[in-house]
Structure formats: structure tokens, C-alpha cells
Image 1 (cartoon, rainbow, N blue to C red):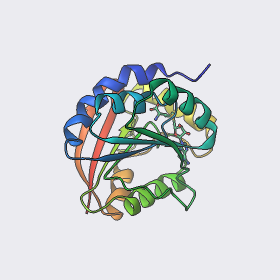
Image 2 (tube, protein in one colour):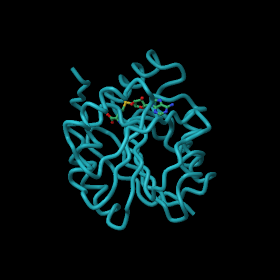
Image 3 (cartoon, rainbow, N blue to C red):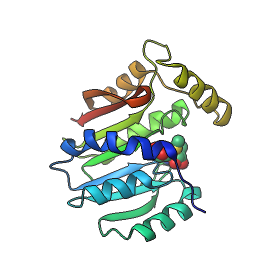
Image 4 (cartoon, rainbow, N blue to C red):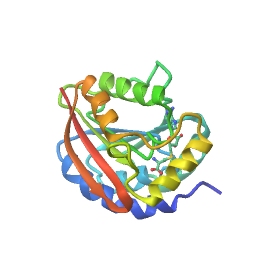
Length: 196
Ligand SMILES: C[S@@+](CC[C@H](N)C(=O)[O-])C[C@H]1O[C@@H](n2cnc3c(N)ncnc32)[C@H](O)[C@@H]1O
């Protein structure tokens, strides 16, 4: 049975509500770390005017393929093999990159690779949206996020919720200018950047 995320079911509508206006003029999206593929299917179905390229590490591909075959959406592509720490990111022509709940799974080097790779792939005026939990001024923003951080640290080497300020500085170093920092349900944020 393919993997299923309750959190995805809860957060897909609030995320779509923020993404939809941002994607008005976009043609092609790359999603990094598609996981179960529930976001990819939902967003591709609700945004039929654009092409959604899902991606992830190889271990997620069987589930992603199964879910995408069932969905049979003409504008949903992939899964593309993409590990942010590998230098050879797939050469895709996209004007928008989206990623949900990935940075707290990654170590600092992977987060740096994430922003370097995004900045390389996006054209000028391309957009990046990242959804997930962030610490502010070195503090957890909720008890739930403190528990999530403990789980991430014990499960993934170097994992843990990242500081918002450090992520924004890293992004800026790669020519990504923050446009909006949206508060989302369950103490998550949706950060929206524009590439120089
Ligand atoms: C908690 S899951 C989130 C999945 C999905 N985006 C969601 O919101 O449910 C974290 C995802 O990050 C991906 N990930 C972790 N390290 C990665 C890396 N180095 N490169 C690409 N994806 C990575 C995992 O494979 C996994 O799909």
C-alpha cells in the first residue's frame, strides 16, 4: 500500500490558497521532495494550466509512480530523480520551485545545496515557495514544533527545524529576495521568494 500523509490532507488546501495567486503567470513548477505525491496530485489537478514536475530521492519513486498513475493527470510529470546534495540536478525548464516540509529533514549542507541548486535552476524573476516549520530568534514557535524538532534530530543526521533568519540570509546570498512570509496553520510558514 502506498504511503499516505494525514498532514498533507490537512495542509493542501491552505497551501493551495497561498500558491494559487502566485502561480497565475507560471507555466512550469518543480516540486522538491514530493514525498507521498499527495500535494503534487492535488495541485496539478487544481492548476491544470501549468505543468507540475514532482521529484524526490529514489526510495519515494515507487509510491509516487503508483499515485500518479491512478491520478492520470496530463499536466503531472515525474517523478524526477532529485537529491539536492547531488550536483547534477535534472535540467528542467521551470519558473517556479515549491518544497514542503523538507528543510527540517535536511542537514545544514543539504539546505545550502538546496538554495544553491534552486538559484541555479530558476530564471531571473523565477519564484520559490517553501512551506514548513521554522524557529524564530532561535526559539521554537510551539510545543508541537519542539516535538517535531526532537523527532527530526533523532531520525535524520543533522536534521532539525532551521532558524528563519539563517534561511533568509542564505537565500539572499543566492539572489533570492523574500516577498512574503505567510503564517500557516499549525505554526508553519510559507516563504515566498523572487529570484534576482
Ligand atoms: C517530511 S517529507 C515531506 C514530503 C512532502 N513534501 C510533504 O509535505 O508531505 C520530507 C521529504 O524531503 C525529501 N528529502 C530529504 N532529503 C532530501 C534531499 N537531500 N534531496 C531531495 N529531497 C530530500 C524526502 O525524501 C521526503 O520526501
